[in-house]
Length: 225
Ligand code: SAM
Image (cartoon, rainbow, N blue to C red; front, top):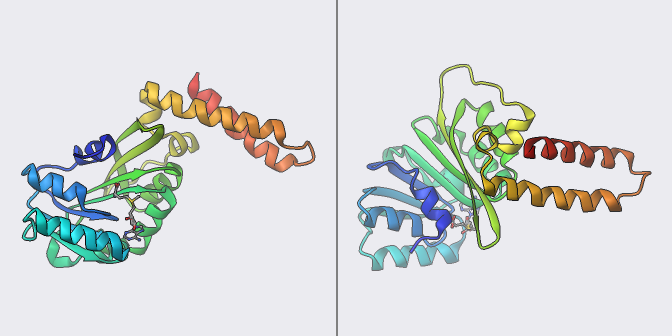
């Protein structure tokens, strides 16, 4: 059974998609989608040998070797042109690592129709990368599982002039900050509490750092209003 987080990611994969799940760990996501008949072909990319071997065994035991190609590869190097991948999932990593994987694999993105990215943190870095590379954010979701907050960002390529995202949209998410769900408010309230503690301990001499934190605090207070 998939975690609530991975289930939420899976829900953004269209029926019939040709899927690449990068950093697939045990290939749970592609296995679930093929078994549900949502997807017929998937690549599960994993850079670490241990999880790669487990994923391969898992796929073989489930009798899904025809449908899921498990590959030991760094980032988007797992994808080959002949795969005709149109949907890429990168989940369970920090926003900076996800951006780095996309940047290093830019050349593999020309035929891709949808990116489904689940960042554990640094959503701002990821959104910045997307808008700088002709991707437009189509949907966002925030969820809480086992005490941790997770953001999902769904993006699609655009040929239009990309709308510039404000600093607030980059940080909070253009959709998430409009919706202001209870989970969203909890996440940023928690962040605010942390920053308040930091500012209490920061000595007055550290003017620059204090200013940085105070700016962040002001932004969060504003979005929480
Ligand atoms: N995607 C799964 C999920 O969301 O539950 C697994 C997340 S797990 C925390 C992150 C996985 O990504 C690990 O198995 C790690 O080895 C793999 N990984 C990290 N960097 C990678 C890269 N550059 N290329 C492929 N896999 C990577």
